[in-house]
Length: 210
Image (cartoon, rainbow, N blue to C red; front, side, top):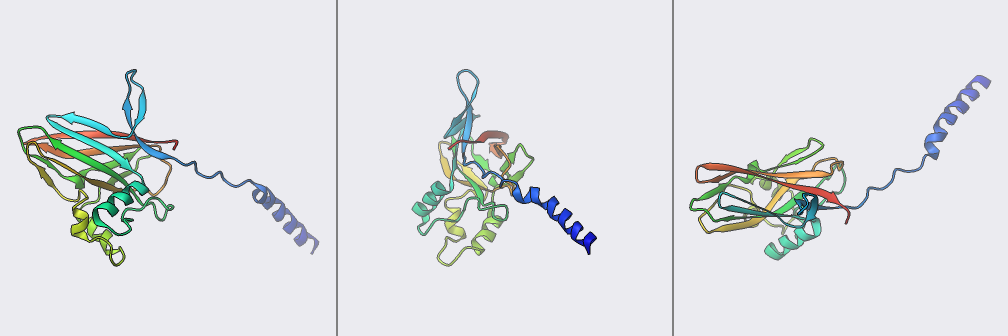
């Protein structure tokens, strides 16, 4: 009996440091901003990133959950919570950008958004939502939510052709990484073709203090 009681006391003693340990600190709030170099070559936050290649100008901006809800609500009505933000590892949500492509070349420009990808310095890689992914997404939405055709009007979800002097502005949505450990993001725009020539664009983003 005495040895059994001693064993219980030793086991309890081993647990006490864990029971007394302070809780893990809460995650610091952050926002996601684009990065561009200033006159001194230093990376600084920027709301909108812009690149021009071969007559094509691309502008991209990250939309936080409130901003994306406002965009969807203004365009389609309803609550607009089609692309929710992060609610934990089991519900990482989406990372959503607004992308504008302007064609200043003499050729048709085609863009396949299904090949656009989001990468992080932690090794995550996510492809943009394409037609099939949007179809699955709409199946899980409640009654009265936007349908496939509604979302296609505001979301890059299939190949688009931009005529000379034309432009298109839509949302580009990615499933967010399951873990929230990353600090840096790159949005890679690939399969952007000017006539028969392809160009790739890379846009850097980073978590910054709100």
